[in-house]
Image (cartoon, rainbow, N blue to C red):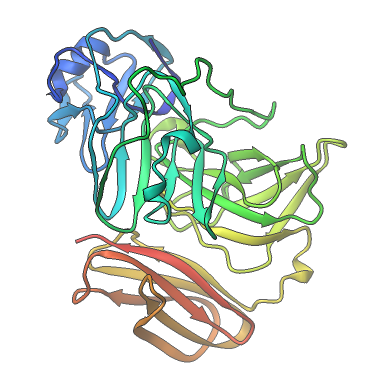
Length: 386
């Protein structure tokens, strides 16, 4: 049995109607869903949706045991699956970039038990539904502490690699009960299929038990997380085209954060000490500090990110100059920190500016935009997919 809530459900299918590794999408949906409860299924590079005439259309031809999916739901529903289980030692092949994969068990495993250590650093982040983990300085951080059956996961990899989860055939390490998610009453939001996670290293006035609330520029709540200290990840939901995500963060819009003091109920505006990367789906930007006053924010140039991202082969890099003028140097670096291209090095006046970057001669992969101003150096990650 799988319970699906309204909105985006990040799922995988541990039980198939046949022993095959894949099953026709239309047959699978007709067996398990209806046009009343399902909007559509989205894989990492294909999808199938009901059109206005309740006919399934799209390029997602088959459902695979190795893959995860976003199930967009009109209504909450409990679904029952019968058939043939997936082998615990299923082989996965990750490509460079984002991979939406399944989990080959119906049990719950601790992240540290099931995640192969050989992937540490090669896989830079793992994203679940409203939860994430990132690898930094030799350790994993974040709210994603377990893998659960019938759930899907985004593995963001810096290179192609094959692997198996560290499971055993008798499920000796599996738990029967999953860790319940925490929510702050009065600050609920719907899960979107577009999500990012902002990692916060420090909030000086935050105490354990306080909450960080994320808002869109329209004032809509788009995420929340209880403050747990260094590298707390705050989910931020983006607009994915459905009514349940109306008013959520658009691509390249920067979220706003507030601190909810559990002891007093006070809501405090927060501001990033450094440059904040704006929203990009499946991204995990890190913010060094959030402060309660803009007076401490001295930077006059703000790197807002790149759009589209991922891109092929052209993207637009946007930055704001908040002083009358500032000298801006904009560079493209590879994952080793080597200079790939210097885009600009000149004076810019107050306002928002766009610089076009063409990567026609570069190979697919992860790159970084480096912005150097008089006050600081800031970065944002971009992904070239050809």
